[in-house]
Length: 586
Image (cartoon, rainbow, N blue to C red; front, side, top):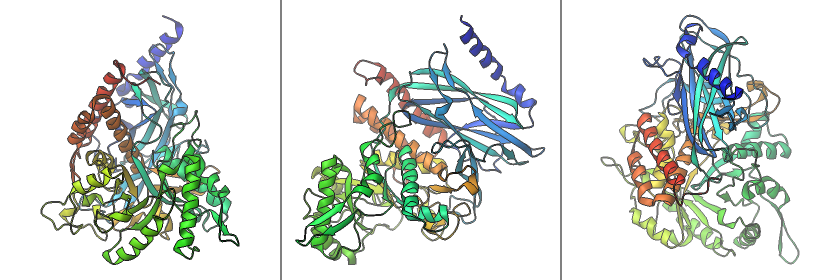
C-alpha cells in the first residue's frame, strides 16, 4: 500500500469514533437528512446518528444537516469546515470547493400558515460560511450554540458532472474557538448517471428587480444596481433549476419612425437576459454548467397605445427570439386569474396577440374553459383545480375533467400548474380543506415543499408557475423580521436580502431559503423520473410517482418513506445506466 492511501485510511479510523469525541466536547451533536426542519426547541432524538451518507447523481446537489446542542452552557466560537472527498485509492477527488456550508437562521412565526402550522421559531434563511456568488466569507461563522436550543447547519455538496462514479469519503471538522473539537465522517456515493443542467420541467417564478434594489439599498438607486442585483438573483434561481419572469421588468426601448415602422433597441435587454437563454451564465467550472432558462416572458410597455402598436412590438419579440433560437421559451403572460367579467377583454387581447408572426404563445392562469380556448396556448390551472377534494365545495367552481387538457395537449398546447394561498387559506389558517395540499410555506413539514414536482409528473404538467420569489421585499417590512403575506409565512418569498450590514462581507447577495433547496430537490426528483422513463419506459417512472402521489392533496408526507422511494429510484437508475444501452457516463 502506498503512503497516501495509508494516511487516508488512518484518518478515517481517527474520525470513526464520534462517541468518544462527543464525550470530550461541550456539545451534543448529530446528523440528519435535508427533509427535517429542525426547530430550536425540538426534543433531542433518542437515537442520534454521528455520520452522514449521501447518494447523488453527477451534476446534482445533495445536502444533510449537522445539529448542535448544549444543555449546560452557551458554547461560543463554533465553526465548521469540510474536507475534500476522495475515493478509496485517493486518486479521484471532489474538491471542498464543491461544498457550501450554511448556518440555519430562524423566522419567528406569529400566525400559523395552516391548521398544520405552528407559532414559534422555524428554520429557513441559509447564511453561507463562504458564498457561491462573490466567494466572500460572511459573518455567520463562527456562531454560538445557545444553551438548551438546537442549532442546525446545512451542508450542501454539488457533484460535478465530471466526477467518476463510486464511493468517496470526507469529513466535517468542528472547531471551538479555533481548536478542533471533533470530526464527522461523511460518505458520498456518486451514481453512474448524470442529470441535465437545464431543467426538464419548465418553470417560471416571478421576481422583481426593483423590489430587490429597494430592499438592498433602502430606495431605488440606479439602473446599474437594478441590473446587477437582478442578475445575481436570476443566477441564484437558475442554480436551483428555476427560471424567472419579471426580472428587471425593464422592456426594450422602442421608437416608431415617420412611416410607422417600429425599431427596438435590444442591447440592454440582451445584456440582462441572453446569458440565461444561451447557457453562458454558468461556465464549465460552475455548478450546472450551461444551464438555460426554460421560459421567459414578454415585457410589454404600458406606453403602447393600440393593438396595432402592440402587435408590431410583439412581432419584434418573436422575430428576435427566433433569430437567436429562443422562441420555444417565449410566452406572453396574457392574464392572471381572470374572472368571467374579464373574459371579453381577455379575448380581445388574445386575438390581438394572434396577429403576431412568428406566433406568440399566450399564458393564462385559469382552468380549461371552452370560451377561452381559441386564445390560450399555455393553460395554468391551480393545483387545487386538478381534482376536487371530496367532502368540500369545489374551490374552482367547476373543475374540468383532466381529459380536457389532454385534448389541448394533442393540439400542441401546454399545460402548466401553480400553487397559491389556496393551499393554506388566504387570510387565516382555514379549516380541514387546507390540510394536504403542497405548500411553499415555512411552517409546514418539508415534504410539502417538495411535492409539487412529483404531482407535475403524475398529472403530466409540463411546467410550474409561481407568482413571486421576493414578494415580501415589497411589503414595507424587513423580510428578516417577517415574510407573512396572504395568510402564509413565506408566501411568494423564497429569498432573503443578503445585505453586508446583516450578513457581513462587502457585497450584496441573495440568501437562499430551505424551501428553495427543497424545491430544487423536487426538480431533481423530476429529473430522476424523466431519466427512468427514458431508460425503462414511462410505466416504471409512473409506478414510483404513484408511491409518492395519490392525489394532489394526498401524497407521502413521511420524510423517511419519501427518501426511501427516492433511494430505490436512484439505485434502479444506477443499475440501468451501467448496463447495455445506458446513457454515456459523461
